[in-house]
Structure formats: structure tokens, C-alpha cells
Image 1: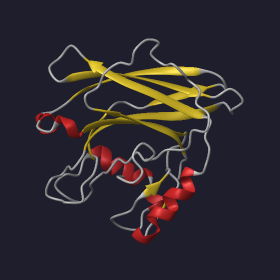
Image 2: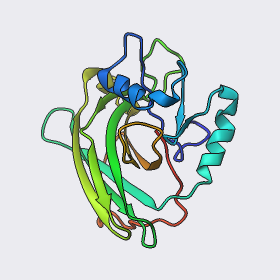
Image 3: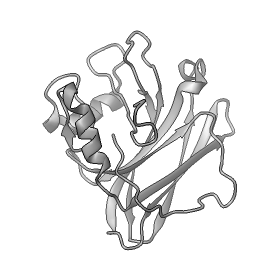
Length: 207
């Protein structure tokens, strides 16, 4: 994560311990065909890169794969205490291929849980998923809200919101076409909100 900042969106789910969640368990079940024991690390929604010695090479190989999907995202303070509203614009570049994708957005907390020194981007909560059907050269906007809990607000600088658009399906492997990360403190960009919906040379991101 440190070596690939900006290119590598990681969501860490715990299972079989005191920080397991129903949503994390659902993701484990989604990738059940790839599961060979804990830990397992799903690259681009497609395969387990285990053993750890393969992680760097597997990342570099996936970063070379182009995508025609873009995601631009930002957050602003909401009405409630510690509530933030997020807007994500999901687009398919002109000349790309129209597709149906499942859009997910989650809040994570870096270095959580604290009793593991290797913890990164630990899952805290998920917004409702949405199935998007987008044509080439078109965009769709998704709005979601999160209220951050006291554990997250104790170290707000470690709060991230991560969104991704994944191939439609009820189980993995399922290609993650693109992902986006929004860091604390969240703020809306200067108008226009999305200066360029179609970036050249964007590469696949991760879940």
C-alpha cells in the first residue's frame, strides 16, 4: 500500500475473530471459490495472489491492465453529527464498452483493528450496493451517506471511503473495473465538480 499509493485500493475484512462483521463474511462467501484459508488476498476481484512473495509481481501485472471505467468521488459534511455525504460519478470512456456493474462504497479505518500491527484499511461499514448499466461515453451519479462512529472519529485522519465498480454477478471471481479513494478531510472540488470524466491511461483498481 505504501509503495503504490494512489494506485492500490485495499479493503481488509476480518473473519473468524472478534472484529468479524456480517458484511465481511458476505464478501468471504462472494469469493468462496478463491478461498483457501486466511489470509487470502483477492487481486482485482479475480484471483488469490498467495503466497505473499507473489504480491508485488501480481500487483504490477494488474496495474498494466487498462480499463474504460472511471470513478470520480468526493464527500462533504452532512446534516447529522459526524455525517458525510458522498457523490461518485461512474463513467465509461468514449470508445469503451457499455456494461452492467455492481457499485459498492465502504468506509474503512486504517490501522484498525489496533491489536494487529499489520492492520490496514479495516472495514467499518458499507453503504447499499447499486447495479449500474452504463453505455460507452455516458456517466451515472451515485449518492451515499456515512455517519462515522466514535472508534473512527478517535483517529479521523485514518478514515477513508473507498468505492469500486465490479463485474455484475452473484459470486467471484468478478473483475473490478475501477476504484476510487476519498481521504479525510473530505471536501468538494472546485466547480465544475468533475473536470474530466474521461481520463486517458487509467488502470484497473482493486477490492
